[in-house]
Image (cartoon, rainbow, N blue to C red; front, side, top):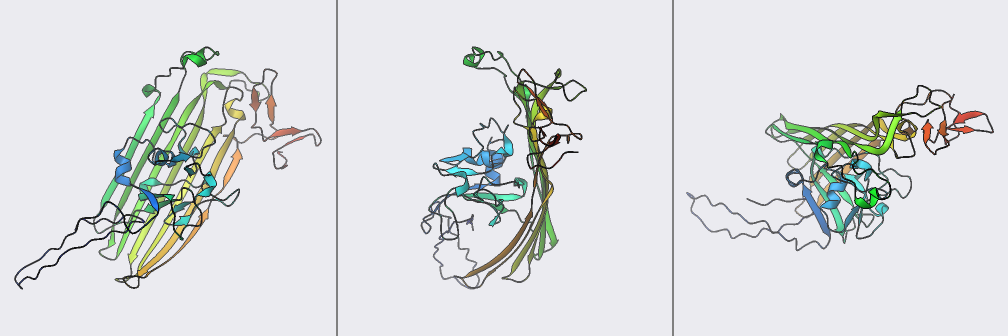
Length: 386
């Protein structure tokens, strides 16, 4: 009793069993050690209960970095404030390593895309943490199971059990909880004394699990909706009905908008006393909209990243403890993911990006530009926009 095994941890439980009569019942217990003396690698194991109890905002990689010594989120110099950058952090660097030195895994299987270095920061699929039991981050001395150094991340999914249980998550904040004060050194450079800050940050989730067949088949379903909206200083949507001309609409302040939703179902089948089989299907849809918004670009002329529409993650695993010293495992994963570089509303035919004389970009996003050689608009891949 009282022994809990987390991922990557080897516990030793020694106990002395005393001789008793037939009429006696002897309960043998052993305390779980707090230090693993059999493994040399160092890991940070974060359980869902711990993350729920801590004021760490959204349960994403930025939160994991803030709770892990020596870890930094890979988000191209963007500073996260209370979760306002959310999933723009796609990987972790540990002790000065590169973002691509690690891998991001779900149930031990890779979720990265294979362009660039194919490592941790090359990621489109985002994790539905309402379906995660614990998160393991390798921080040093990884073993032979790991192909790379760096901050390797593994999300250990939740399974159902013989009793019906539900867990939920509700996090929300908006501009009412932010002061909007601007540092004096920025005011001296022309910034307003007060500025709009975050519009809102939210993270909602609900998970339900239980038995399909007692002691045989269990299910768990995790559903999560999360994201944020952040105002851009002195930036406004276009009031003009003609896309060729930019007229700031001071009643509609520009903002970046990240919106994510994920639904997943996981089944666990205890086929025999030794053989366990799991299957999981996840559905995800997301948008990182109006990215790169700033004082020199109207919201309509910035690029929005549409993720998937939708994306699917399918996994199957099998495990069998053959002996006390031999564990057999096998698994397969199929991840269908994609990203579109476009505008929040797709440009109309022949709409292009325009830079006016005062240096404000309007019209379509910058990848839709006028080609003087062909006399038509095309995107960065040379595909005509007609």
